[in-house]
Length: 365
Ligand SMILES: Nc1ncnc2c1ncn2[C@@H]1O[C@H](COP(=O)(O)OP(=O)(O)OP(=O)(O)O)[C@@H](O)[C@H]1O
Image (cartoon, rainbow, N blue to C red; front, side):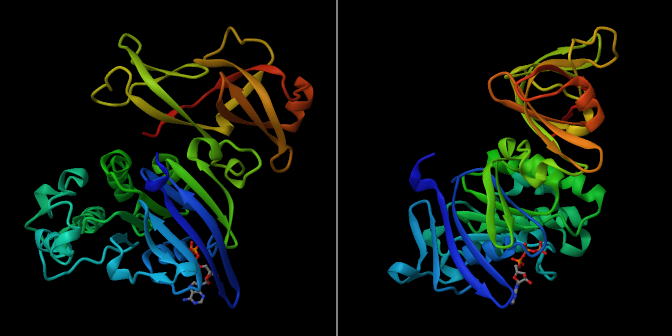
């Protein structure tokens, strides 16, 4: 990534009970997830990027282009920022077909800014078969896919998404997530995505920013942040680490798929109807509660994935529980939640070599 492809967001903004103070340099490609509790300033960050918040102290630079710089007196109004904005509720024009909605997005873009034609998002979002329908003839998930494609039809240089799945039920979310996953590799522009859902973040985020009370608590790659025991993400029931791996074979006789990562191999059930080709990059999610520890390599156990690991952190994690940080290989991190009693009995200390027994591995992308 070159410095000019970066997205710079620096903003200070005061409201009666809230102050935003962020200074971020985000990757110029892939999906950055803004994550944090309600009221932490996620939507406000998107609004600053889109030019919807007038503040005297902000800088927004994308791909070397300055949209806003209070120091230099630069301020581009929203209509001059090439930004696509997707909200919780898809706001499609009811009287237009899907094609009409997409063409509208395209036609309102100044000719000089058009990099794509109105069909740009059709394949990426799988909506080619819906072109003749009106919004009321679409499911909630389809409507959101069309809303994203309409945003893309404007040839944005930045795509902002504010909880685009929050209004959908679990089945619709499951339907749309695979399409969203493709955005991080199918688009050459950065996506800034707001969500409260750790599951969505685990699947979609390349980069993450944790916000708390208007400040940046931490930022970094999603893989790194999810496994940091000092951050709230690693605590609570859904705490999990992400592991980047590549496929390295299908054991067809056992119905298992083998993944290789820095730190060993993982076996998991082959759930896809069509096995992934060799060396496909995948991401797996391993919940802290699914990882137990042993001082010696367990021999007679039904657990398939048992890997050597080194203890890096031990921290309290609620009544009677501790969260253990683990390193596998050079840099892979995992988390294990065990009882404090087990921790004491095993004499777990930092730098101790152990075996991690992994009971559940889910491929998340
Ligand atoms: N137009 C406004 N006028 C005054 N205060 C506002 C306005 N919009 C938001 N706020 C306040 O600013 C703070 C940050 O709001 P923001 O919407 O950015 O939070 P958020 O992290 O996106 O929250 P949520 O996850 O609930 O959407 C909150 O305290 C909110 O009440």
